[in-house]
Amino acid sequence: MNAERCQREDELLESLGRNFIGPELESHLAACTPCSELRLVAGALLDDRVQAISEAHVPSSGTMWWRMRVRLRLELEARARRSLYIGQAATLLVAIALVVSFFGSDVTTELRELVASIHISTKLLFIAATWALAVPIAGWVAIRQK
Image 1 (spheres, helix red, strand yellow):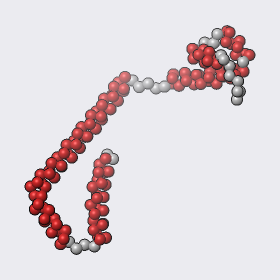
Image 2 (cartoon, one colour):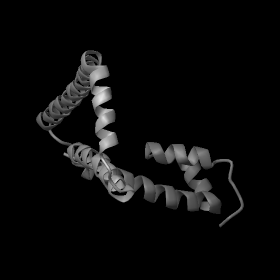
Image 3 (cartoon, rainbow, N blue to C red):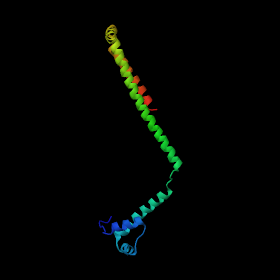
Image 4 (cartoon, rainbow, N blue to C red):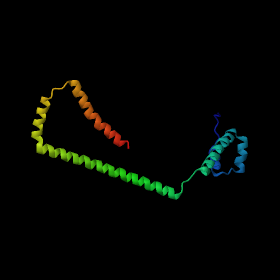
């Protein structure tokens, strides 16, 4: 790689971008090694760019319109789903609050008596608690993947 840098490289790049090299710059290219190398490399890259642009498949306007409509519908469905999740969570909180307010003291005493009457091993209690936590989480994960 040459450590030299010509002062006319920017001019050469601009001329290559316009696809026109004047006679003065052409004579400079014959004498300047860094510029001739730059012309070779940049010219190849610009040729590849032109070829890629000419070969690119541009979808029809009808296809683009259809894609936009599908995307809009999916975004609206996601927004509605989020609203439903918020509504369900709020409903669940209100239901829990109502149950606690109506039956709070009765349920608490009954629950304490029930827990006190159960004599279960620690391992079995740990397995039941793990199962009680894992099943809803697994269900949530399965629903989210659809």
